[in-house]
Length: 472
Image (cartoon, rainbow, N blue to C red; front, top):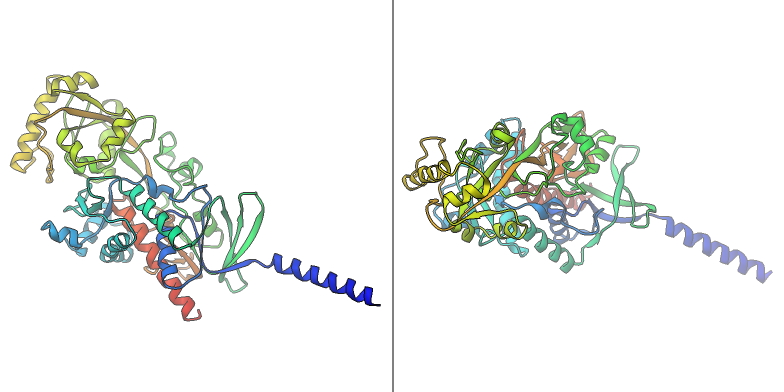
């Protein structure tokens, strides 16, 4: 009899252990994607006392954020005030709406323009101070915050956030892909299904789920679906930018917005998809064509500059700059290392190196230098001059437009809550960064992506924690 009791006890214990092992793990906030938006959200939620699990399908964190170069747009910061730059959230708002052709969601843009300065402070507090300033296309003033010396902002920010996530012991799980968002019979999100490094599927329960998995700039099936004319363009996007988060949200009736607006960046290396930061133009470089002539205000918005380059002979152009700009922008050092830069001791020598008209290029530089010294460009209306191109060695990088950013994505409100096709909030689901749409409209301004991901990542985390604490 005792043997039977012991046997039944052992079986009961075994079944109990199996049941416990099959019970999905639970957390307060589960974040899908460990780029800038996901890591900002994770840090914010953790600091407010939430238990966070941060998933990343790639072997490492960083995503597209690590590839961003120019900087983070914000208005009314202490760094602007120290340099006497007059800016305001209202001017930031107007520039962003105009750049997006007024297709942007104005409520989201208003939130971004008013709260991006808090993101600059957040990054400083977490090891990524953006103390230098430049200007990108479509901005009325210098508001693109970047590391001192012009170091690429994206890798600088990503490195700092990864370090902070590790220091806080936030549960970051790489090589782990979310495959499905789970809802209960009331339509409330209750967790996800995922796949680990070993390929095995498992479930995770969560009080709140946030999608920060990026856009679809490396998914050419989706690019062909939404903008077929871009099918043969190269992309600057990280390989993981495949839009899975967008597709998962769509499957549970989330509204998608602005999906047809895919941005091509004016300055990528032909055939390689290597991004040349817009800050090179912001710091004083000019664009010339095969004839050695300027053809546009280099600080126009990305869509305008891209289309103008595509109309030039060979559908390409050259960024031209000198030693003074190299000293100001550390990012350029990486272009030298990658052997992307042609050079010449004189304008004539540079013209010969890149095979453009050796008589025209010196005249173009002389004319532009006159504009820079007079602070007035009577040809193309450029109104920001950081360099007079009349000294030192001269350099050029060949560029052509390439796929860079997907403005469309999951529809959100100003709390980063996901809304469905009826305009109602999907309970417990949030989205931020390039996975979300509506902030940038038809065209994103340079510097607005880093502002977007940090700002709305933190906003979504804050709202998620508030709801958890309120018992919602």
